[in-house]
Length: 204
Image (tube, rainbow, N blue to C red; front, side, top):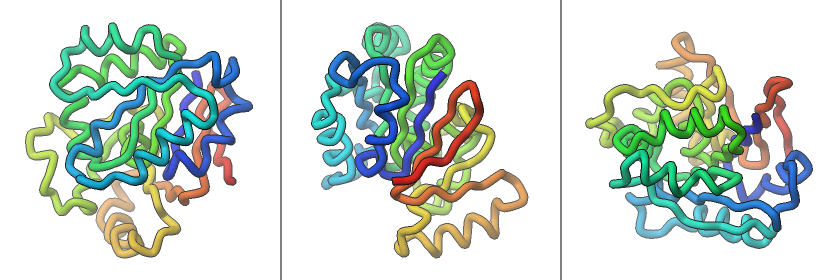
Protein backbone atom coordinates (compact mmCIF):
# COMPACT_ATOMS: atom_id res chain seq x y z
CA UNK A 1 0.00 0.00 0.00
CA UNK A 2 1.26 3.47 -0.87
CA UNK A 3 -0.69 6.68 -0.30
CA UNK A 4 0.89 10.09 -0.81
CA UNK A 5 -1.04 13.08 0.55
CA UNK A 6 0.09 16.58 -0.30
CA UNK A 7 -0.97 20.16 0.24
CA UNK A 8 0.42 21.22 -3.15
CA UNK A 9 1.42 18.17 -5.18
CA UNK A 10 3.52 20.06 -7.72
CA UNK A 11 5.87 21.17 -4.93
CA UNK A 12 6.36 17.75 -3.37
CA UNK A 13 6.00 15.05 -6.07
CA UNK A 14 9.79 14.67 -6.37
CA UNK A 15 9.73 12.98 -2.95
CA UNK A 16 7.30 10.36 -4.29
CA UNK A 17 9.60 9.09 -7.06
CA UNK A 18 11.99 7.02 -4.87
CA UNK A 19 8.99 5.31 -3.26
CA UNK A 20 7.56 4.00 -6.53
CA UNK A 21 7.96 0.40 -7.71
CA UNK A 22 8.80 1.53 -11.27
CA UNK A 23 10.06 4.64 -13.05
CA UNK A 24 7.45 7.34 -13.83
CA UNK A 25 7.86 6.57 -17.55
CA UNK A 26 6.48 3.09 -16.90
CA UNK A 27 3.51 4.30 -14.84
CA UNK A 28 0.06 5.56 -15.79
CA UNK A 29 -1.89 8.14 -13.80
CA UNK A 30 -5.66 8.67 -13.67
CA UNK A 31 -5.86 12.43 -13.05
CA UNK A 32 -9.18 13.31 -11.38
CA UNK A 33 -9.96 17.05 -11.81
CA UNK A 34 -13.53 16.97 -10.44
CA UNK A 35 -12.90 19.10 -7.32
CA UNK A 36 -11.99 22.02 -9.58
CA UNK A 37 -15.37 22.19 -11.34
CA UNK A 38 -16.49 25.23 -9.35
CA UNK A 39 -13.57 27.42 -10.39
CA UNK A 40 -12.98 29.17 -13.70
CA UNK A 41 -9.26 29.53 -13.14
CA UNK A 42 -7.42 26.58 -11.54
CA UNK A 43 -3.69 27.24 -11.77
CA UNK A 44 -2.94 24.76 -8.94
CA UNK A 45 -4.42 21.96 -11.04
CA UNK A 46 -2.48 22.90 -14.17
CA UNK A 47 0.73 22.99 -12.11
CA UNK A 48 0.03 19.53 -10.67
CA UNK A 49 -0.74 18.07 -14.10
CA UNK A 50 2.35 19.71 -15.65
CA UNK A 51 4.59 18.40 -12.88
CA UNK A 52 3.33 14.83 -13.40
CA UNK A 53 4.00 15.10 -17.15
CA UNK A 54 7.42 16.71 -16.59
CA UNK A 55 8.36 13.82 -14.29
CA UNK A 56 7.52 11.39 -17.11
CA UNK A 57 4.20 9.91 -16.02
CA UNK A 58 1.59 8.96 -18.63
CA UNK A 59 -1.37 11.08 -17.52
CA UNK A 60 -4.99 10.49 -18.49
CA UNK A 61 -7.81 12.71 -17.20
CA UNK A 62 -10.80 11.05 -15.57
CA UNK A 63 -13.73 13.15 -14.35
CA UNK A 64 -15.75 11.11 -11.84
CA UNK A 65 -18.80 13.36 -12.10
CA UNK A 66 -21.79 11.68 -13.72
CA UNK A 67 -20.02 8.34 -14.02
CA UNK A 68 -21.19 4.97 -12.72
CA UNK A 69 -18.94 2.77 -10.63
CA UNK A 70 -18.42 0.19 -13.38
CA UNK A 71 -17.38 2.95 -15.83
CA UNK A 72 -14.83 4.25 -13.33
CA UNK A 73 -13.55 0.77 -12.57
CA UNK A 74 -12.97 0.11 -16.27
CA UNK A 75 -10.95 3.34 -16.53
CA UNK A 76 -8.95 2.78 -13.34
CA UNK A 77 -8.08 -0.90 -13.64
CA UNK A 78 -5.16 -0.33 -16.01
CA UNK A 79 -3.83 2.73 -14.16
CA UNK A 80 -1.02 2.58 -11.58
CA UNK A 81 -1.84 5.79 -9.75
CA UNK A 82 -5.13 7.47 -8.81
CA UNK A 83 -4.38 11.20 -8.53
CA UNK A 84 -7.14 13.35 -6.99
CA UNK A 85 -6.56 17.05 -7.59
CA UNK A 86 -7.56 20.01 -5.42
CA UNK A 87 -10.59 22.28 -5.37
CA UNK A 88 -13.77 22.09 -3.30
CA UNK A 89 -13.76 19.05 -0.99
CA UNK A 90 -17.49 18.91 -0.21
CA UNK A 91 -18.33 19.03 -3.92
CA UNK A 92 -15.69 16.37 -4.59
CA UNK A 93 -17.08 14.07 -1.89
CA UNK A 94 -20.61 14.49 -3.22
CA UNK A 95 -19.53 13.38 -6.72
CA UNK A 96 -17.37 10.61 -5.23
CA UNK A 97 -20.36 9.24 -3.30
CA UNK A 98 -22.77 9.44 -6.24
CA UNK A 99 -20.38 7.72 -8.64
CA UNK A 100 -19.35 4.94 -6.29
CA UNK A 101 -15.76 6.22 -6.32
CA UNK A 102 -15.42 6.05 -2.52
CA UNK A 103 -15.89 2.30 -2.22
CA UNK A 104 -14.10 1.65 -5.51
CA UNK A 105 -11.00 3.64 -4.51
CA UNK A 106 -10.84 1.85 -1.15
CA UNK A 107 -10.99 -1.48 -2.94
CA UNK A 108 -8.40 -0.58 -5.58
CA UNK A 109 -5.91 0.84 -3.06
CA UNK A 110 -6.29 -2.32 -0.99
CA UNK A 111 -5.37 -4.25 -4.15
CA UNK A 112 -2.26 -2.18 -4.78
CA UNK A 113 -3.19 1.00 -6.65
CA UNK A 114 -1.27 4.07 -5.47
CA UNK A 115 -3.36 7.03 -4.26
CA UNK A 116 -2.03 10.58 -4.51
CA UNK A 117 -4.01 13.52 -3.17
CA UNK A 118 -3.45 17.24 -3.58
CA UNK A 119 -5.26 19.56 -1.13
CA UNK A 120 -8.96 18.52 -1.45
CA UNK A 121 -7.76 15.15 -2.73
CA UNK A 122 -5.81 14.70 0.50
CA UNK A 123 -8.72 15.74 2.72
CA UNK A 124 -10.88 13.19 0.86
CA UNK A 125 -8.43 10.50 2.04
CA UNK A 126 -9.27 11.28 5.69
CA UNK A 127 -12.01 9.63 7.80
CA UNK A 128 -14.23 12.70 7.66
CA UNK A 129 -14.28 16.02 5.76
CA UNK A 130 -16.73 17.90 8.00
CA UNK A 131 -14.11 20.61 8.63
CA UNK A 132 -14.59 21.68 5.01
CA UNK A 133 -17.78 23.45 6.11
CA UNK A 134 -15.51 26.13 7.57
CA UNK A 135 -13.76 26.69 4.25
CA UNK A 136 -16.91 27.08 2.15
CA UNK A 137 -19.37 28.24 4.83
CA UNK A 138 -21.49 25.14 4.23
CA UNK A 139 -22.47 26.36 0.77
CA UNK A 140 -21.67 23.02 -0.85
CA UNK A 141 -22.19 19.44 0.20
CA UNK A 142 -25.90 19.80 0.92
CA UNK A 143 -26.61 16.56 -0.95
CA UNK A 144 -23.97 14.56 0.90
CA UNK A 145 -25.07 11.28 2.47
CA UNK A 146 -22.40 11.82 5.11
CA UNK A 147 -19.06 13.57 5.55
CA UNK A 148 -17.19 10.26 5.64
CA UNK A 149 -14.10 10.13 3.43
CA UNK A 150 -11.82 7.31 2.33
CA UNK A 151 -10.25 6.71 5.78
CA UNK A 152 -6.79 6.00 4.38
CA UNK A 153 -5.47 7.77 7.51
CA UNK A 154 -6.97 8.14 10.98
CA UNK A 155 -6.58 11.93 11.14
CA UNK A 156 -7.94 14.97 9.32
CA UNK A 157 -5.48 16.87 7.13
CA UNK A 158 -5.55 20.67 7.08
CA UNK A 159 -3.72 21.69 3.89
CA UNK A 160 -2.01 25.03 3.20
CA UNK A 161 -1.27 25.44 6.92
CA UNK A 162 1.63 27.83 6.23
CA UNK A 163 -0.36 30.02 3.84
CA UNK A 164 -1.49 33.22 5.65
CA UNK A 165 -4.70 33.18 3.56
CA UNK A 166 -5.86 30.14 5.55
CA UNK A 167 -4.85 31.21 9.08
CA UNK A 168 -8.32 32.36 10.14
CA UNK A 169 -9.93 29.16 8.75
CA UNK A 170 -7.47 26.99 10.68
CA UNK A 171 -8.19 28.85 13.91
CA UNK A 172 -11.93 28.30 13.46
CA UNK A 173 -11.41 24.62 12.62
CA UNK A 174 -9.30 23.99 15.73
CA UNK A 175 -11.84 25.85 17.90
CA UNK A 176 -14.82 24.01 16.46
CA UNK A 177 -13.42 20.54 15.71
CA UNK A 178 -10.26 20.23 17.80
CA UNK A 179 -11.96 17.94 20.34
CA UNK A 180 -13.89 15.95 17.73
CA UNK A 181 -11.14 14.96 15.26
CA UNK A 182 -7.41 14.36 15.26
CA UNK A 183 -6.32 17.38 13.19
CA UNK A 184 -2.93 17.62 11.45
CA UNK A 185 -1.60 20.69 9.67
CA UNK A 186 0.13 20.19 6.34
CA UNK A 187 2.32 22.91 4.85
CA UNK A 188 2.58 23.48 1.10
CA UNK A 189 6.08 21.95 0.98
CA UNK A 190 5.11 18.83 2.94
CA UNK A 191 3.44 15.47 2.28
CA UNK A 192 2.27 12.49 4.32
CA UNK A 193 3.59 9.14 3.11
CA UNK A 194 1.32 6.28 4.17
CA UNK A 195 2.45 2.69 3.67
CA UNK A 196 2.54 -0.61 5.54
CA UNK A 197 5.12 0.84 7.94
CA UNK A 198 2.79 3.64 9.05
CA UNK A 199 2.68 7.40 8.36
CA UNK A 200 5.69 9.63 7.74
CA UNK A 201 5.82 13.39 7.13
CA UNK A 202 8.25 14.37 4.36
CA UNK A 203 9.35 17.88 3.48
CA UNK A 204 10.91 19.58 0.47
